[in-house]
Length: 197
Image (cartoon, rainbow, N blue to C red; front, side, top):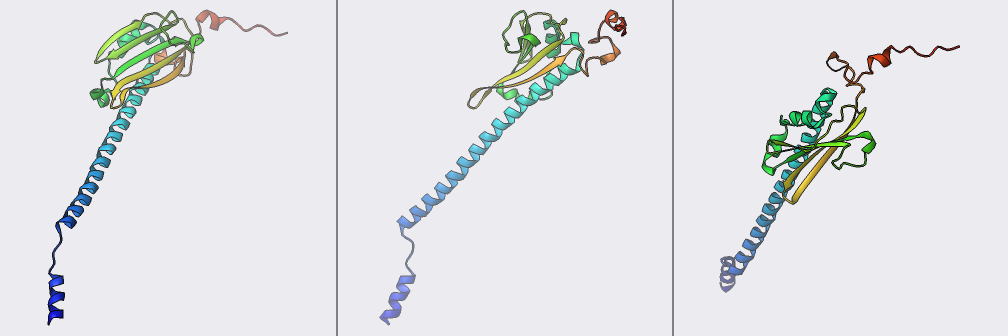
């Protein structure tokens, strides 16, 4: 009888307090790891969204400039007027205080983006457009246009830049609005080619 009684007593034993605490600790550590992974994933998603939005802002600005006639972006006043209109993607980055900067350089000054006689620079921040470097590059035949977007990310200031070269008489320039913008002058076009012997 004592044998049965000791087996039954052994089966009736419960879980000790130490075992409960160890089990609770393991559960809390697992949940903590899941929450930390979730927070990290949200951080990565937000950073990715900001980078994508800034790239889209810069690309949309360049595409808008490429679609305009030469005089509409080759001087600072016209470029400032063009920058008054926000891009479609600007609202995606509104929580990060974005600043757009457009720099237009003469092709001979490709390595320099400093403000000077061979470049113009316009900036848009919180809907306000400022001309940082004024000038008129309308007589140039080729321009380098840089669209830069700066914003305040989770890890500090971030920047994304896109560049394109636009030719005055390029494929899209010569036929814009059926005008002579970007086309050779009438005198140059009417000069007959030299005769061959």
